[in-house]
Length: 204
Image (cartoon, rainbow, N blue to C red):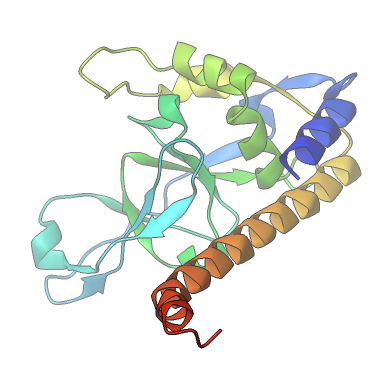
C-alpha cells in the first residue's frame, strides 16, 4: 500500500505546476479566552508523520498565561518547533473543538486549490521536509522554529483538484488498513499466552 501511495503521488505530480503555500492554504488563529474553572482538552502532534494524539484536559487555571487556539477537523497543522522532523498532520474528526498552544500553526486549505491530505503527504516527503527544514532555522537542541513567512513562500505541487481528492481517499484507506493491522496484532498478542498454555497442555 505504501508503494501504491508513492506511485500515485509521483503520477499526479509529475507535470503538476507549483504555487506558493500561501496561495493554497491560510494560517488561522482561533484564539480561546480561557476561564479558570473550565476544562480545555488539548491535541498534540507526533513527529515523523505519525498523526495527532490527545492530551489530558487542563483547566484554565492550570494553563495560566499559555495561549491556546481551537482546532477544526481538516486543518493542516504544523507544530512549529518540530515540523522539521515531521510534526505535521491533518486534524481528524476526533480533534474537532480541541485546543493546542500557539506553537501549533493551523491552516485552512483553499478547497478548489488543494486538499489537506495531499499537502500533508507532500510536506512529509523527502523534498517537502527539505523545504520545511530550510524554513526552520535554529540549533537549540531539537527545537528549530518554523518561520511563518518562510513557510508561506514554499512552492508546493498543485495537481488537478480531482486528482488530489482521489489521492486523499487512497491515503485515508491506507491509514484505515494500518489501524486494522495494529488492532489485529494487539488482539493476537493478548491471545498468545493462553494459546501457548493450551499448546503445552495438549489442548490444541
